[in-house]
Image 1: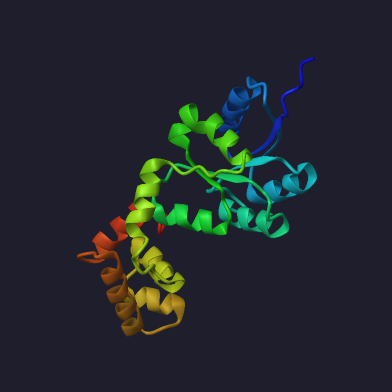
Image 2: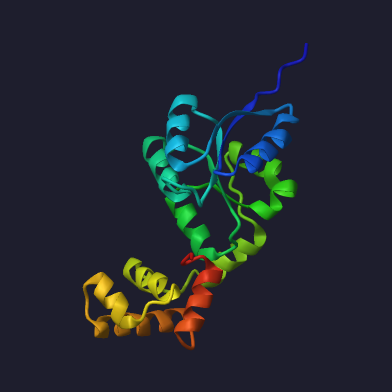
Length: 210
């Protein structure tokens, strides 16, 4: 007598309908998994998770209303057992680190969905983790470095969109000298030559986004 294969119930969260449809088509062909729900933003993701209690959540990071990291944190606060794979276009170690720290058990690049999606779902459902080798190498390479503080990230984010030290100081209600001191710390931590180089490094690593 054949025993039915347990179905892995998957919730897909992404603000692009075509990506959700593509994932649904791939997952729908598998005998051991099924899409049980979809969400277009973080708010819907939390609501759908509460209602459906899926086995695995595929969570985009950049979405309107509530981004993926916020939704991830909200779901994990309610259900520490939730198995969430973050979907992103960024290979940066800083973004991966924030997602894993928030409770993600998988970090999947959208460029590798065709080759890695099903294996990643099965791996995290079985209790494992999924981090691409190149991202894992980046994480290990920066593990011993002192990270930027939240305030330093905020300063660099504003510098990246063209604001001067004086303008950033006015926006954050601190002196221009304070911003200069923070930029000096940022340059040292990122081993950057100047502010333009610091922005370039931070964008590549996923520390900031523009």
